[in-house]
Image (cartoon, rainbow, N blue to C red):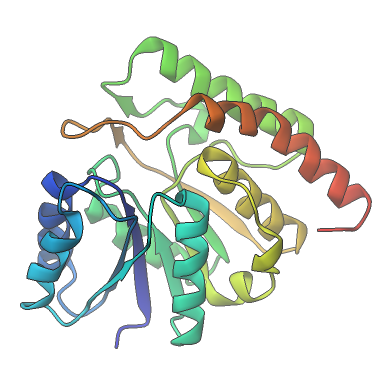
Length: 240
């Protein structure tokens, strides 16, 4: 078993997940295990993963009963990783918006930082390809808003390409993490920061998906608006 596990939540990613698993196997034939958490995708995503499992023992699959959300998928993945002793636990998307080649950089930095974030906006740059202007503005404003309200010293708090050291996840009461979507990424980074762990951002180029549909919803946006105030209040009350 590798020391590192990458968690990939999926819903209707049959056209992407096989290519992603192949890319990860080619780049990291012995350095990385993969856990796919599929929410009963009707397009046969889990079937694609099972086919790859026949060829690659480093791939694991958790099939859930329905579309239960990004946050609960990652929490299930974190519990799986901690129970099996992984040292580094990564998050990434299945749709190639996160370049699998950048995992090596995340793991390198995780040797000296407790949370490493692949950032679209670090160093006052914008490294996003093929996003419509409206979505880019929304993402940038969400980042600024989050920093202003919470004080979280991260340029890209909604980013979902991350590597946690197991010690950071062990220090968090995962039972108290309830948010979904972008809010989940904000909440996890905030909790790591408030526990006194070190956070580092490294630049990535984020390329919008070319196959499949975005999973972002209005509910995700609304949750992100209030979650930052909830986190700030809970922190002030010492109730995180």
